[in-house]
Length: 125
Image (cartoon, rainbow, N blue to C red; front, side):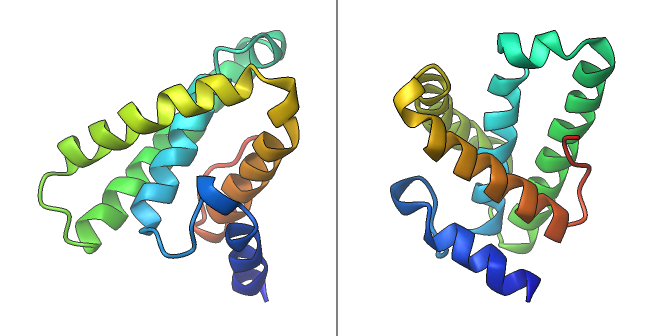
């Protein structure tokens, strides 16, 4: 059931997410989104304890992304993740600052949370 819900969420993401993309890429995109979220006024307003927790969340997503990339046979994982970050950072940065993209951003955060839960990662509280 949980996998079915996760796949429905992935399918609903349109061009920003794809059920056919590797798990490592989805996890890296989530880690990138959380990295950018960490420096928003909303995240900073939640205090130092939340900031430290968010670092743990981000690290867990990157570690799992690296684990999946290894399983997927990615030959140069550093270059692979650098390319994902280079593509994702500008998109997430523009999206986080755009009130018209609020629902799409919320959908992605919900997806990242569901995917992280499925992967047994540390989650944002």
